[in-house]
Length: 304
Image (cartoon, rainbow, N blue to C red):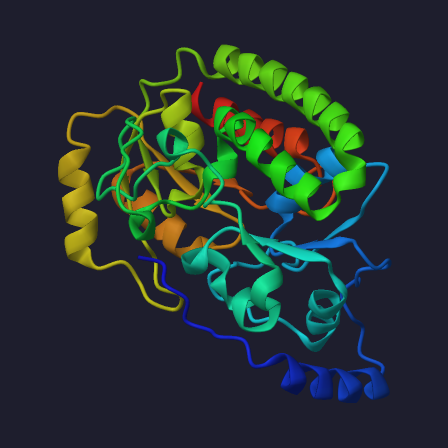
């Protein structure tokens, strides 16, 4: 599921294109400003790295707000950032493996660092169990679970200290501070999500299933919309059968997906639609706390 459909070209080709872009005056994404700084493929990884490296390093995210990592292709400006970075943090080959052709040996898979008990498998119908299956079948959207992020922090610290041994004390102090924030955030989410399991949720994409699994939300089904195509009548009928007897239903979409499909499904099910942003990257959604609280507030308001 969710295999890459776009592969980036070689770094040399991207650098040539970058020269053309620069000559035409087209705007570029921010590049790494200092030697030794880092690149993340998507905003959530930057949100996890920023609290750990603050005061010592900078992190640049490649994916623009609102874009999907499943269909993203790096730009020429991205190639410059990748060339300059000391390390490149990505999730895994199925989500943002497009970075590997240009990132090479500097690329670090964050999902590989996440302890196995906190990895959630891709299910046909999303439940609440943290199943451990082979890596290729894992749902890579782990950042939606603050407890999974807390479990990841020690491994991330090890990588950062390996890259910059002189910064050990700095990273460890930052790590303790970030873990405290994650514990507070988890307590807050546990309190806010309590009692919201009665309304069944149909999710278009499993980007928030870690969060739903952690806090007991009732996701009964998910669908994978193909851009430009309508949901089949058979799919809609199957979901309606699953929801027989439900007084209320919530269709969960996201800003990275076409809203038209979510609205059509909601109309067929007699449901309401809530749209979340699992990636963020702008406005109040530039920090991890901001990303989690924003989406939690939208879910809470829709489920109450």
